[in-house]
Length: 214
Image (tube, rainbow, N blue to C red; front, side):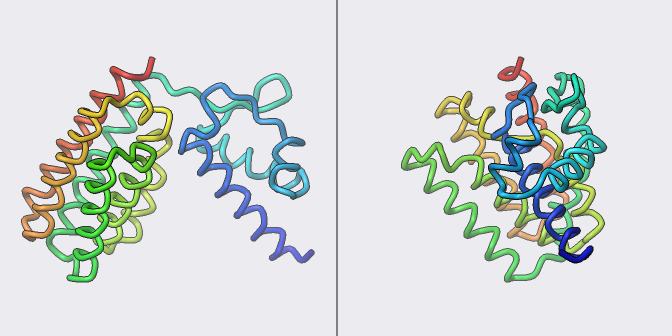
């Protein structure tokens, strides 16, 4: 295997592990055993170890007793992360409204309508994916690669399946209603309203999460 191939494999393993942690598939304080992860992913332990070191650098995992565990964020750390998201994604919503093209707006509209339809039919298992898809579409519509990178880096802890499982049906629908305000402002090309709506949406989500996660 060439150095390029090794690098590509390590990057893929890193992305898969990061996705699993951020999505809550590996829960806080869960042990991450290199040999088990290597077997699950059908790779050697080298890309697993490299990926865990990268994740440790991002603050997502901790070295403990010659092994690794998923880091559990405190409520204060979650609040700080959401504060960053509030600023960055608020600006992304403003840009999506003011410079997003019709194709980007159609994508945002379509994803929002799909998410609303999913919750109206009680598909709670779709709540996280629909949420992530909408936020990603809005960030993409902002057409700012550096902003997108910063937002992705700030999402060490965000809305995931562990949190979604704690949402009541009423809270799930309130999240959709909050998205609706954001989407309407973006489609109306009202940058001020879009930014304010996104900031309010993220602040609302933080309040719910602080009440749910102990």
